[in-house]
Length: 397
Image (cartoon, rainbow, N blue to C red):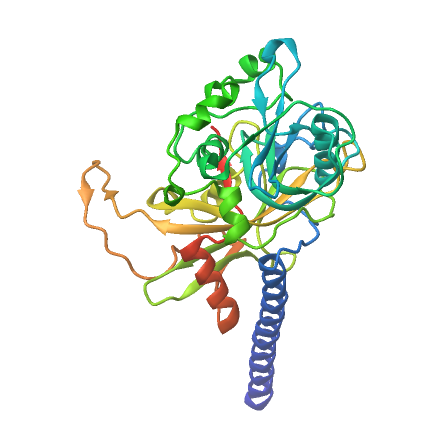
């Protein structure tokens, strides 16, 4: 072969290589633009179809009401006097105890349909959900959705009710969200035997003695409950379930790493197209443990030097109309990867932490970090990361 021919072939190979690199960059850029658009939709409370599950599917069973999952809906409803609606239980095992209207989601119902039915059955009112206030979970097998709702019609039948003044509602909501107490008043959707068996037995003293509310601090400046405060100054956007089906209980992650320079990176999976990781919840752990599974797979060496914090939920997706096929829930979450500043060497001795300002390197070729360049998206994500102004999700484990 002549030098000229060889040179021409070499030149051709070089052009082909440059062409492949350029094509790869274009594909990556296009893929990131699509991910960017998806993140923007999730940030605005919308959903996105779940087409695949990247992690944990082999450890997860399809969500099936009455078999593998139990969903509870709970309503916080105020009247025009800023008093909250309570219902008095008639069941023998918790007779005359006071509860927020709550109950199990039935087969074929959406979460909002279940809420309307429970309030109608227990309190006699028609209602409409305003927003989710809080999600509580004990793994995918027990998830409770707490709604702020409003009455939309007259009472249809006599029901035993009790109201508590709004300046005393902080204690009630602390019982719900466990911000200051270790006890949770579980509603009447679980029997005494079920609560004992599943570890749900908690102190109900405050709820079973309504007069107890009136000996608490009544100073209006002491703070009101989360629901009352949300009505006055919403701490997160209105968040209601998005009608999109899902077969498993999964967590879709907007997993970010930030530094002091306010740079922000998002962890993505490369194939079959660039996308946000989705991980299935497993029975033995909290729903939010799915985020830990992703980090363990992506960067096993750095995992124990990082805190994986699920900050909250942008939106959630549920349909529920096909039993065993659409009973799952997809939680679209914001997760922050934060370096643990207390690090130890192989002998267990504390060593000085020296941050690089860069996300930990991925070791699994499935994953890649992408630095957010679009200024508006960058500002939104940084704001959410700092202020956690999104729907909270609490594990009861």
